[in-house]
Length: 244
Image (tube, rainbow, N blue to C red; front, side, top):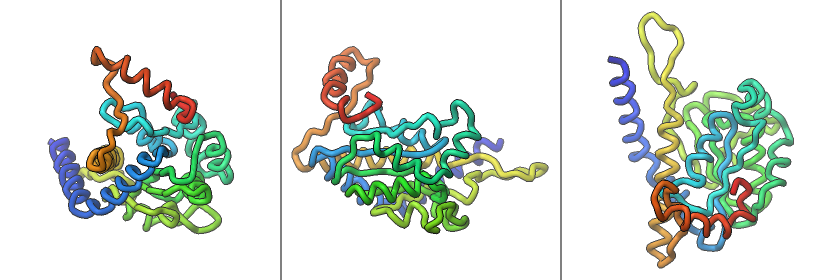
């Protein structure tokens, strides 16, 4: 049964992340904690399927409140997936997107781009650095090193990052093979990437609590007390976080 092989490979990747990325997870968490301690935000950005990383840590039960998901319709899979692919390669778009967000020096920008090669995530990293933010990038080192940049500078997202988080995936993302099928299948970046991001969040919360700070945390709206608690957070942050 191939699904068991896939799940074993996922377990192996999670173990590799724990073994190789622990220090970087701690560094990323320290940046996030420092930003929140200073009243700043964690901004999360991605294109196409990578928008899911922003959704995963935004307005999330058990997650940090001061998280801004940068969600741009043209970069999502709706209205069409090919439009998203086209859009993420366009020069100048990242600046226009960031101009519409409430960002400040001392904030943290986390950019998810498995290949690290496309123009919009690269320029988002560039713009974030110009505006005094710390930059974290989530990628596959193997994938990113195996492809050329699609930006005129020849740079990739990791060239502007203060911390690089490696999802330990393969080039092309798909990890499974089967006799009779030439194309590899079974992507890993999402499930591993979500685990990495949540690891950063829980570590950041731990660091804040150790300093005597009670970070604001979303409560499930399906708990009886959730709506009342979350309403206060929404009122406090909605002027700074566009999707609230």
